Length: 244
Image 1 (spheres, helix red, strand yellow):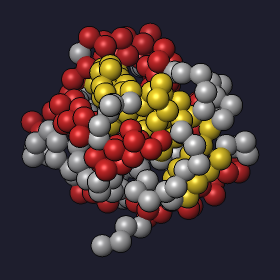
Image 2: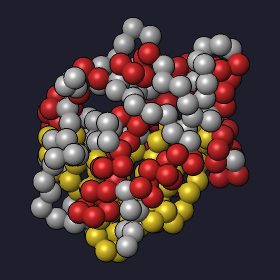
Image 3: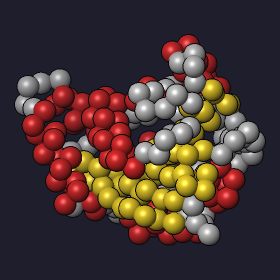
């Protein structure tokens, strides 16, 4: 069945494609997690959506290329980022003119039909010899998901909910299965961690962020606690280098 990537990006009746929690909290902490490992040079973002994460890369890189499957998302992003090169294509068949010193793939791998094939292209074709690959996925073992299992809302930690399926999810990763696919793609996993300890669902976070209940100090505490308990984080993070 041919996928409609524009449709997959749309909010459903009971589930958003992305929440304010993603944009305002997770994106900020993803950049903080990546920053110590950034290399000088160019950057390739695989799956740029409407450019919400792209804008956070602008202070670090002068040369940014984004590959996005949704032509509607590309049209919106181009209006905001005239100096970024956008390519409307699938990762499986896109032809890119260069190698890249930094490659970013955040909350995208779980949408792919052939993740190991795309990771193989990252390693063999796109990553420069001294480049670094930043891979982030939602975590099946996040406490918010484990609580949902105990509540009977989902059957098991790595289940794919109907709403997630509508948004194109194919898998829900854990640290071990994410590293499995990275290694299957030929990549060398150099660093592994989690981003942001999370016991509430995204829609619950969105409600709280509109109140004075959550302080910046509390958000910082969840971020720091995530380094102590990576398997209990909202997202899991691998920093990889080119495998031989």
